[in-house]
Length: 442
Image (cartoon, rainbow, N blue to C red; front, side, top):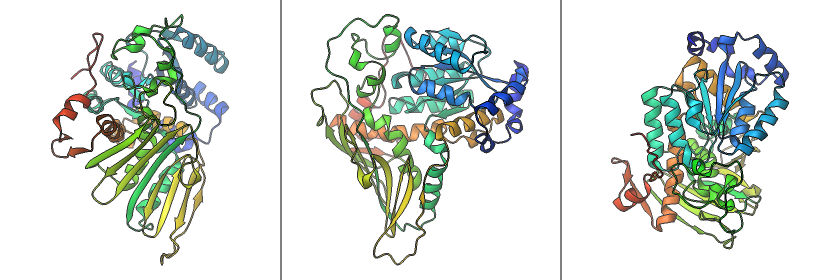
């Protein structure tokens, strides 16, 4: 273990830099991994492996010297599925340890870093417990399910001095970074408005169905964790947890933290001064959902406005794209999404702007994992592409939009006090109440 810790602190040179890793295919990764001394391997455990948790596992295992040694999920059906998936990927690897209780996984001494891919209402508690257990953490977005949780997560990272990467992988994708550099160049002129939108035609909430017994193999009590105790309902479970306030924040936090993140990053923006949100269950009022399927939020900053617009069940978003960020300047507009970016010049602009149309050249998730592992080895926290502070910032902004919608009022932020000017909002929405004996460490 001493050798491993020494390697994690001094072994950045062994990686050769994250930028070199993408040049290898999976076979090359495997060859290089086999050549790493056993003491120099980085062992990971995954908590929550049904969706993005497993996508993160597959990306992590492409990085030389990284091994999966343990998985945890409250659904035994998911564990069985992933054991089968892993056997196909790694037929000669040692048998994985499996857990239903994440706290037992954290007790496993040979684990260096953990993935947290559970529903949003679990992220804060599990990240803090992992840091306290001496593990580095890759936590899925949104990092917290309330502003208070986000703050607690930032404080925990500082207290325990662990490497914590938020799963906003667009921060590692080159064309997103290039687009922001173009914004910083000033060629767009004064940017008056940033539009951020997410139209997701494939996303629909589940039907209204009666409560039922949990499926065989599901520890539903553990799935609920700190959320209020309620009967099991299949339309609130697995993927559909996103649409219920007990567990998540709807499309605003699910996709918003990816897209709002670049709106804020391009403008180097702090927390907004005011937010007003309007929306509702306009598209599917008959389906099982609490969060709005349609929402528009207006964020006020000192020198520009930011508009968030989301819609479930349709794809016809702005500029012919189903999602994106548009920086609207006096000279031109830059439009950015996962498919690339382009600059649309104003017809009467006197400036002659180079107008690139740039497509993706890399895999953002793979690059994000290369970055995380490189920092786990080097311990150079400032090289993380999405620190817990960055993840907490955009999650806070997304929560503000939801709080305006849920409260039915324009919310005003007190920058000096770091809270809303209306104390009723602070009391009701700033921090999630924990239930079932769970407590968030102070």
